[in-house]
Image 1 (cartoon, rainbow, N blue to C red):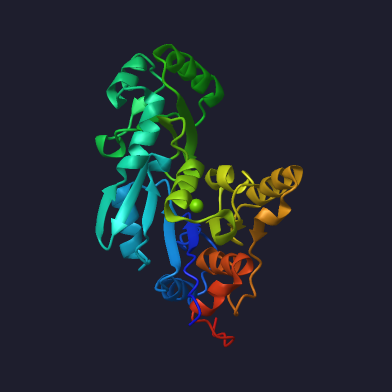
Image 2: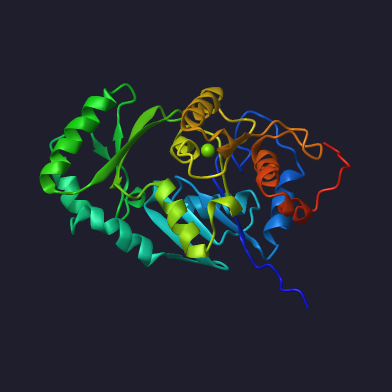
Length: 291
Ligand SMILES: [Mg+2]
């Protein structure tokens, strides 16, 4: 009897506007059902990689009928959830790993450093976590200067942090997250790959926007940008990967994949099949198209 090949395949994906069709472009309606069929295969390991916290991750899964992942990277990389059916628990090994950066300092110790920064306003308690301190700022703030000043103070406390500034276009406010330096989405993905026995050749990451660029342009992962990805993100990823000499680490979905349009989940599946053709048979797609 032939030995069965038990090598797992890993799909790591952003949610908003990558799997979730919450952008301006239309969604191919067969794409999310195909993702659910795919993930039911025992060799497929699914991980969501998102800025969302536990509550918002669960809300997205419910609202969009998404498959339950094996793990979810949330809070911009600060937490990895180990998901056993419907039971979610933060992965202690990841927490211990990133805690080293803060050298025993707590969220409160770090907040105390910035108490007199009137450009920072603490976000609501539910948006804070043990290893993520989140602030609001004005949208038009000089974020480079602010981040430099904050890093100088953090240096004096002896903690290694990454400061991530972004804009919420909907509420028109600046968002600033203070995280342990290693608590990035890229490190979290690599940590999980090692834990799940996955290597680069049998793993794929999918994303759509600027906050996925550190993963996509690292050149360390086989990456997919969905067709609805921002044009400047596609251009930047292409340029960086080309300078690293690893153009084959990026696939940009173009559509015409089993009659689907390449947006959102359709683009994720198209890219996955590009790198890992074996997975195609598990998506339950036929050439018939009714889009
Ligand atoms: Mg996104």
